[in-house]
Image (cartoon, rainbow, N blue to C red; front, side):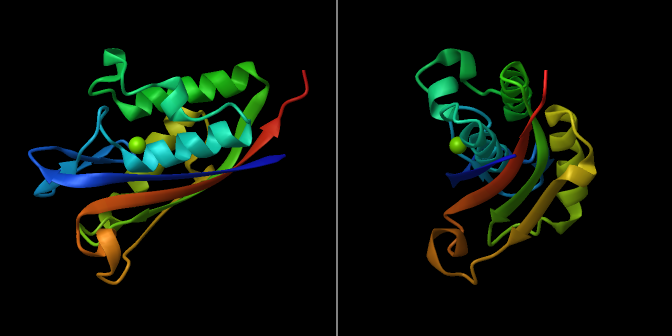
Length: 159
Ligand code: MG
């Protein structure tokens, strides 16, 4: 068993779609980024790569590479899952927390868990997604951006 942690932040801006956990969420703003800026999936991928000591998504999918312009982060998660599999690791479970003042994410949590689980080749029971606010404090509280944390366990598969 190996543990990994990931953290990411993206700025909220007008004129962008809000994608979290591979699910489009109706909101007046979206997250700014080179890819679809899915902050939740980014934190999760960094946790998985960290657990395997395989670097981070900045190294794997550089934002200087146009191949990743507007990239669907769920597809990147499939790539990270494959990379870990090549190295002999599978995801045991993930616990993710999204920190956003708005919008309310509760109605979308189940859909996020299923999209993430499908991309990571596990069951939704292995994927936890939680949402919280920071009580109007700081950049998330002021609605300037959204942050996400992820903690994962991966398991080395005997070959
Ligand atoms: Mg990111």
